[in-house]
Length: 106
Image 1 (cartoon, helix red, strand yellow):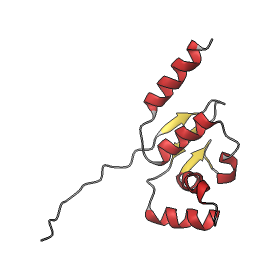
Image 2 (tube, helix red, strand yellow; image 1 turned 45 degrees about the vertical axis):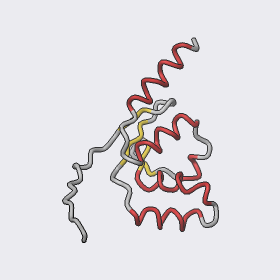
Image 3 (cartoon, one colour; image 1 turned 90 degrees about the vertical axis):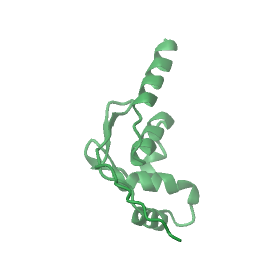
């Protein structure tokens, strides 16, 4: 017996974050299964870069598309923020934790 459930997706709300260098990143839409297929084509056999290719499908920085190879040179904290917003996660708590850690180091 199959039970049907009516899951209602919440409306898409873009998430905007400011990176450590002052640039502004935003997710443009939800990730879809077709993005995974596209990302896999981009990376070929480099499966360790799949997440980066997925980020490049839905995130912009200063309104411009992100090239996944550029993510390789990004600070890890910034990349993790981008990964979070690509997945539609509210990363504001990560920003608060990161800022507190930086202030404690001064």
